[in-house]
Length: 191
Ligand code: 5GP
Image (cartoon, rainbow, N blue to C red; front, side, top):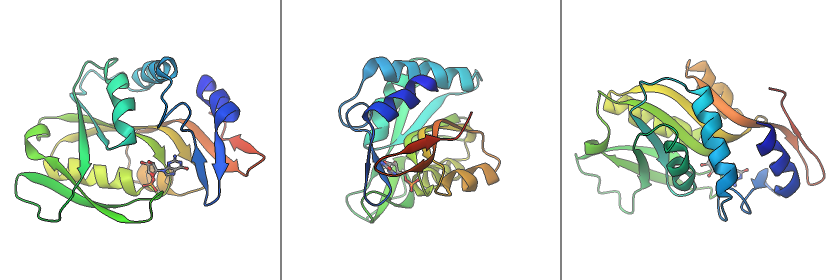
């Protein structure tokens, strides 16, 4: 998505540890006009009218998912990072290792909000090693719902998350795939 790539080049900042900061427009301060365009683009790439729910994970996925969901007219449900490990039977749960925080979270989702009849589009801001997305996929599998696809705003193509997801046969769409990045240079994979 050209508009997004131009914005990453203009305002993205590469930090040590292979982290791309896009917090001036995507996941701290949010450029709503841009995220509306992101919503339209996801709709174009996932035209299925079977989708019943958008699933994401707190925190930074939520705002993006809420704007995108307006182009799908379906509810957003988000997996929560559990405060305690006392997980009861009313929730689906999985473990996710955070790339940015270098720790493992228990993640939960109430069984009320995802059932076997749902057709789910999973959304997140970044795809790096794939732990977050694989965790969300686990939750959908546990619920018996159908995965219609996964939409990612920025995939870091030099990490292998994208490969792991595509190998599972999941329809993955990333709006910008970073091929390489240093503090002075960032390149994208061609669409
Ligand atoms: P993964 O689980 O695929 O390794 O990492 C995905 C999660 O880590 C995303 O939900 C995102 O919040 C965070 N993340 C991974 N890489 C980056 C990055 O380069 N920049 C930012 N801002 N977040 C990242």
